[in-house]
Image (cartoon, rainbow, N blue to C red; front, side, top):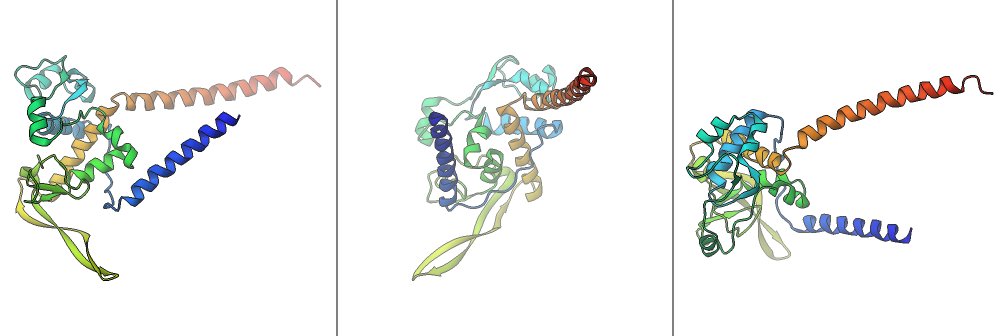
Length: 254
C-alpha cells in the first residue's frame, strides 16, 4: 500500500512539473489543430505534403508506404504519387538526406517523425504544438538558416513551406515594466511577401499535414476506438441480460 502511495505521489509530482514547465516557458499560446483522423481526403493531402516537404530530411522509419492504403490509397496511387524512384511500396519511409551532411548543415540529424505528434504531447497537445509551430516561422537574418520561429526560438530547421506561406513578420508591442522595455507578441502578423497559397489555404494545408502526423503516430487508433465502442455496447447488453437472468434465478428464493 505504501508503494502504491509513493507511485501515485510521484505521478502527481511529475504532472505538476510538466504543467509548471509549460506555464513557466512564457511562450505563445498554441492554436487548436483541426485534427480529424477519419477524414481521408485530409489525410491523403497530408501524406502528399509530408512526402514532398518533410521526407527529404526527416524519416518515418516505423511507417511503411503500403500502410497508406488504410487512408484510401491504392498501391498504384502510392507508386505514382508518393514514391521516389528507388523506393518500393513495402519499404519504410526513409529520408533522402545523408546523416553526415545533415549534422553538418543543421548541427544535428533531423529527428524521425513517425511518432512526433505523440512525442510532443508532453508539451500539451502534440497536434496543437505542431500546427502552431508550422505556422509561426518568420524571416530572421541573424540566424544561419535565415528563419526563426515563435514556438521554437532559434530552431535549426528552416521554413521548408515558405513558398506556400510566403514571408511574414510578427508584430510586437513595447511594454514598460520596472524601467525595463520588453517586446510582446500581439498575435498579429504582417505579410511581407505572398506565397502560392492564401493564408486560409496555408492553414488548411498545415492542418492536413498535422492531421497526417497525428494519424501516423498510431494508424490503428480509429480501429481501436471503433472496436472499443462495440465492446462497450456488448458489455452493456450482457450486463442487462445477466441482471435479468439473476433476478429470474432468485425470484423464488425467500
